[in-house]
Structure formats: structure tokens, C-alpha cells
Amino acid sequence: MVGALAFAGDALAHASLVHSEPADGAMVAREPRAFVLTFSEPISPLVLRLVGPDGAAVTLDRFVQRDATLDVEAPAGLSNGTHVLTWRVVSDDGHPVGGAVVFSIGAPSPGVSAAAVEVIDWPVRMAIWLARLALYAGLFVGVGGAFFANWIGAPSRLATRLGAGVIVAGLVAVPLSVGVQGLDALGATLRNLPEPVVWRAGFSTSYGVTAQLALLALALGLGAFWQKGVAGKLLSLAALLLAGCALAASGHASAAHPQGLTRPAVFLHGVGIAVWAGALIPLGAAFASRSPDAAAALRRFSALAPFAVLPLVAAGLLLAVIQLGSLDALWTTAYGAVLLVKAALLVPLFALAVVNRVRLTAPAERGEATAIARLRRSICAEMALILAIFAVAAVWRFTPPPRVLAVIAAEPASVHIHTGAAMVDLSIAPGRSGPVSASIVVLTGEFGPLDAKGVTLILSNPAAGIGPIRRPATKPGDGTWRVEEFNLPRGGRWSVRIAILGPDDGLRELEGEIEIRP
Image (cartoon, rainbow, N blue to C red; front, side):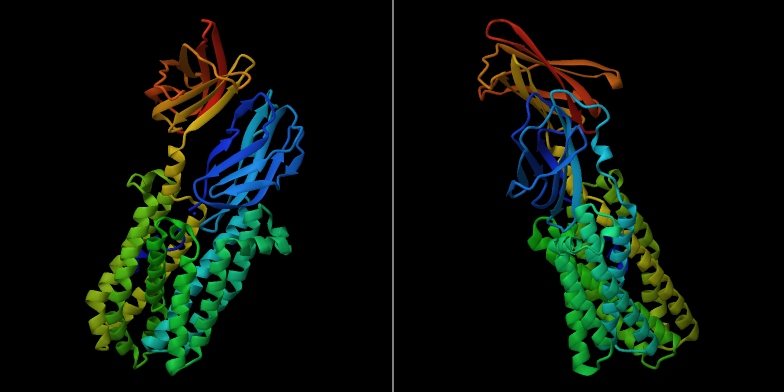
């Protein structure tokens, strides 16, 4: 029943950079007038900086956004050498992501790389993970417990204390989660947490909406523990529905298309988890205290459970299919690895659910002591497994889903090579190892038309011991030279040589490098 928790949580959709001008690793002859960054989905820019060859950083605050593309005005007077364009943006799912594009003007500078610019801040990541874990516990165990107490029955002092305590922890963690979200968005450290700009950045993401809805859900759930009758029922029901809305407001799964399907699926999934997980503490406490209402509450919950679990499972499977995209993503991506770990936790969880339903529920309702003792132990084991699943689900915050990776993999790799005699724009699609095709635009060094008689593409990867791959290009009539399907056996940095036979039968050869993804 609770098995579909494997698909709970925001399953890290990140926006990812799919194209840049200049391209990463490009060598350009003159300073660019603008930078173009194209992402896999719509984004909101947070920080754009250009680090020059001397290490000085300039903030780039003049840009135009077109859906998923940023046109950024370049500073005037850029010097020769290697420059690093660093960026941090927020994607539709509310997750901040960052990266860098390295390019050189004239000639590269020694020892400059994007790896030196983008560093993972593990304390911030741990704070994000802990806050997400507390959020899940508060919404699912706390709010779900308040719903159980008011609609199913068997309220007890122990269950109320535990449920309220989990909600209070959530009420503390959710505001802090906005702050650490802001830290992640700006690439700041924990010592910057008190700064107002950090909190503004956190609330400016779609996660800010999730946090506000979650706070309201937790507050109503806490109030529902202390109310009885109609008031308690209404408060707990509102809290449960708001918990589902909070989860659907941001996150990878909610940002996936079609959102008219994925957001309702996340909502149903979250509500189903809360109904199931929230029942465990009240039921366990009721049987532990030998409450006379325990058997009746168990009977009522057994009748309600299928109506929560079936939508939970269906929504979870649907979201998993959308996020994975293909079966092999289960074992070839970090997202799939997290899903497999959660699936491994589901096996004993499902086994416990089946045993409880088939073998223990009926005798426990009749008051058999042995069945009640076994049911209490089983409920404790289920709660431990559920918390472990929450902990694993929180890791998804840091893993882009395969559907995003597929978009990136389909993007071409490109390089611009410019000399005084000629210039070319080479694009290899898809920009990864395996079967690819190439398109080549040929111009004069002054950006004029060059009526070449022939163009040959020559690729080699000396580091891998792969000799020159020579392919003649054809010109089908659209002005672009093309090399139809050929094979690049591995990823890495490839050397490019393009031989152009000019209209005067003179041979021009342009050389550069292009990065091919594995």
C-alpha cells in the first residue's frame, strides 16, 4: 500500500544548459558582443558573472529572457585569454542550478577551467536534505495523523503528542528550508543565511509557494489535533488537501509536461501517502494502550485504505514513467539509482502490508493478543521503512530526472572556428558518442559567402588512440554542407580539421576542438 512511496517527493527536474554561444571550450578570434544560454526548460536568472583571464569577476545584469533562452550583453573590451561565464538560474520546478561555460579569445590561458569555479557546498546540501526530510515527516506523518484522529478515530494522548511533535518540527524546518533554498540559489554558504537577499531568493523560487502552503497545512494540522467534532474534521481535511497542493506546487514531477496531468498526479500521490503514513502512529498507539476503539479504528481504516492506496500507486507509476522516459534509465542515471534503492525498501514494506491485511487485521479486530502484538511490531517496522523511504526520496532534490538528461543528450555539439581565410560553424547531432550527423556552414573570414567546391570533415581523438575519421560533405541545396550518419565511438574532446576546397581550387584547412558527450 505505502509501496508507491518510492515515487514520492519531487522527483531534482532541473533545468540544464543545452546550448551556449560561445560554446563551452570554444576558441573565438574576437570578443563576442553577446552570450546566449539556452536551457532545457524555462528559467529565471539569479546570478550571471564573467571571470576574466586575470581572475576578476564582472556581474552581468543586462540580459533579455526569451522563454528558455537568455541573451546576455557582453562587457566591452574583453581581453585575449580564457574567460569563464558562470550562471545560476532557477528552473520551473523551483530548483536552483548552476554551471559555467569556458571559452577563449585568441588563445587559451593556462590552468583555467569550470571545475575550479563550480564547487559543491556539502553543508548547504545536507541542510537542504534535512529540511526536506522534516517537511515530508510533517506533511505525511503529522498532517496524516491529524486526519486519522478526526476521521478514523482512536485518538490517544501518545499519538497526539507524537503527531503534534512531528508537525512542530516541520513548522521549524519549513522556514529554514526557504533560507537554505536561497543559499543554494545564490551559491552562498551557511554563514550567509541571515542575509535578507538569501531569503528573498528562496521565496522567489516556486519552492517559496510550496513552503507557504506547507506552513498553512502544518498549522491547520496542529490545530486539528486539539479540536473535536466538525471543527476538527474540517481543519484536518483542509490540512490534508493543502499538503497535496504544497507538493504539487513545485518539484521535478510537478514541472514535467503535461502539467495538467503531472500536478494532479503529485497531489493524489501526496494525499495518499499522508492517509497511509499518518495512520501508523495512531493505530500503533491505540493497540499499545489497549484502547477499546482500536479494533473499530483498524476496521474503518482497512475500508478506507484502498481508496487512498490505488490513486497513490497509479499516480506514482505514472510519474515514474514520465520522469524515467526509458527503462534503461533505471540503471544508467543517478535518478534511477535512487528509485532502485527505494524499490528495494518497498519489498519488505509491501510484505508487511500484505501480512497485516491478510493475516493480522481480522484476529486483531477480534482482540487476539498474539495478533495485536505482532501488528504493533509490524507497524513499528513499517514506520521505520517509511522514514527510510522519505530519506531516500529527499535525495531526488539533487538528481536531474532522465527526461531532462534525454533532452540534453539530443542537443548537438558545436564549435566555431574562425581564421582570416575562412570560418566555419560545425554542429554534430546528437552531441554524444554513437551514430551522429554533421552540418557545416562555411563563410569567408569577413562573414561573407564562400562558394566552396568541396568540404571534408576530419575528426580524431589522439588521447583515445582513434585515428582520423575522414568524411566528405555534400551540399543538398540549403547552403549547408552535410555529413550524413557516421559513428563516433566514444565521448571526450575531439580534434577537428575541416578542409575547404575554395572556388580558386585553393585548399583552406581550419582546426579546432569539439566536446562530445559519452
